[in-house]
Image (tube, each protein chain N blue to C red):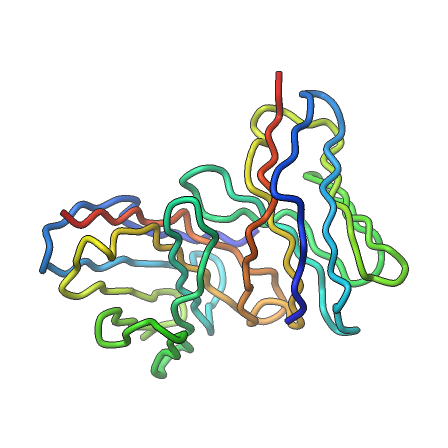
Length: 114
Length: 111
């Protein structure tokens, strides 16, 4: 299956700071990148979808100015949580997509904002 | 995308076959059935997918009913490491289509 590298696997930051999460597809070109988050005891919720070289599309209720997505290459996408607050503490998971393959997922980033 | 319905939780004895059902009665003709699982604090892991024929790989078997309104994921010899939340998802395009996750089935394998 596809190899997806996501890091960091966990991060603790202070309220008001920004955190960047990286997602790399190591063995295929990801024309699309899906970013999910998962709160405790809940399922994964899609936050945004980005296509390489263009702006991301955000799901309803997700602030685009708070969750900055960069998808500048076919192998790397980043999610930056700006001015993080405790309510942003969650498990963030990326999923690079390409044509004609089932989606695979990164191992997630556990963000804790203190 | 069609919605799926799964039992909230199931238990299975180690070494036995685990059969996880999924209802997707509103599935469209071009929609695939995907199964993923999520072990605690990890990202979802792809298991298997199919359109209308039964499928088998090294992890599991997928049985899809003839009318495609339901399916069953079979783990033939469950081990403790198979304890996870299992998600059944239907989606129309392979690869570039977002996956919408329901609540899944929490499968517990007991020694």
